[in-house]
Image 1 (tube, one colour):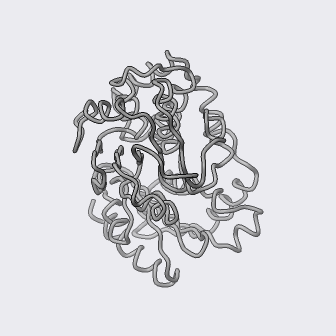
Image 2 (image 1 turned 90 degrees about the horizontal axis):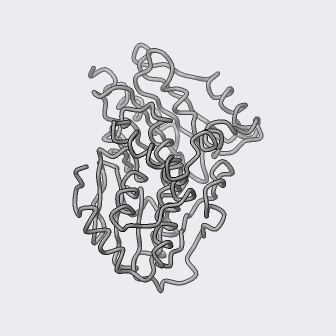
Length: 326
């Protein structure tokens, strides 16, 4: 695996010299963000390195089976740490408004990520955009450190790989991904239990919200673009919240004929947008970047603080233009 910036071995050597480290991932963490930070924390702890994991957002119930998930802090108790490890973030702002302000003076920053839009913001940067997930990179780092793998670490990493490959469906799923997954299962990860937790435990409120949102599906560009908007009124009608939209954009992308899926959802004082694409010839990361976000060519996101009436037409124009390039 070719790593941009500093190689796995160099980062592993730096981590191995630490006595302690603070670890953080992006807000609204998914399986990869949580699996990579928790797996890294447990792996470093196996070597006697003290760690704490931060996240600005609430950890959803479906992820609380991961070892250490219930111990994640929302803010640091102090800044007396030898390093800040930022994982699964294309830019430093992705850790959240509050944490990026609180942690801006903590150095050195070690940046571990797999987004091709990564801004290389660390003193050390281990970035591999061809990796399936940040968990895959963390696996390599822990192997280089000769960390003591156990079923808890293996489960965290396999959960993140499963999440970011869509349960091994997405084009990021390589031959090597299966080899890493096989090794993690051999180390004690239980793929059936992980699959049940990630994909088989939707609350009824989420199913109701998905049904309501999909009933209002819009198709554009001769059916190549699918778009849904989720409003506060829709949350109220379903007894749901923003966290219940997590997989909605994938449902839109999976519609026959849709090449690019758009989900716009209301959150606290802003709109959050998720973009997904099929095939190798589309690039939604550049669209997200034009709105101040980022991600992968096939999966990207951004936040928007102005009105929906401004956002929606501008976004759909850009997405439809991208869809019609094929």
